[in-house]
Image (cartoon, rainbow, N blue to C red):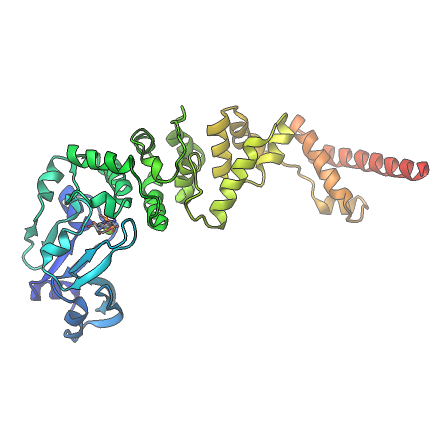
Length: 380
Ligand code: ATP
Ligand code: MG
């Protein structure tokens, strides 16, 4: 038996949520959610060909192996939000499909498709909203229960070119002018990551202009006059921390940052405090920083120094190394660092310097250092 046989045999299995939306929009899905109308764990127990890998009875979810493939299957469930802004509590597992659907964020994400018949079940007008490109919440408390939905809405608006329906917009505005800061910032951070990793000026403009940024700070913030999307496209190849380039401009205090993220933000804050005067100081300031910190500096200061570093100075490096100094008869010592530093300064002034010229300069400089050292010994 494979999953298709399962789909055809039972009539209480559904594709649910984003995957049905993606089928209708004709977009590839990032993940496929399958639900059983009923209890998925009990359902899978009764199928010989389903090997249970893992199950979570509190949520009614189960991971199974069928024909050597892994699938996550959930139960229909009903949830409530006893503590607004925090994780919901499951109050019923195996509820009617309708109750599972109406706990969801937007009508476009509240569709189910029967895997046997292919029938699309739409209790909330999701299909019509998809055709009209509208994002609509399912009830008036939606953002109060879970403010991360505001960022999810932004993500879908940007990804699909959809807009909030008028009433949803007014509920969003009402929430944003009266935010409950006692919320689960981990979930908010996850949504900020997936939204801002899309690298979209439009997302950032909406985030700022519609005051969604107030979710992460009580301070005011003005949109910088900068094409961040273009900058990121040009200079940032590894896409995992793009989101932080946008969010660190505002405030990251409420978000729990990991080690790499913390370094990016700390370095950025230090960089903007520096008074960088020449090419040598540019290199020394940026060389140990992640590219995200360097781009943040550029967006904030707009003085061209970060761009000069990324375009040219980054490439200029002395050709000589410790082995060359050893060959000159110089035993390894703290002098090495001074010599490399000097050669870097000279190389930045004249990037055409050849390796033999560098060696000659290194030799001269070493003599000068020794002389100064002897002179100062003589003085004492
Ligand atoms: P993506 O394509 O980014 O995966 P998605 O809509 O599938 O989008 P998921 O985070 O995978 O989003 O969630 C799957 C489904 O779970 C959603 O389609 C939606 O029905 C529901 N869901 C997810 N997050 C929330 C939330 N915060 N509040 C209510 N329902 C949610
Ligand atoms: Mg999904």
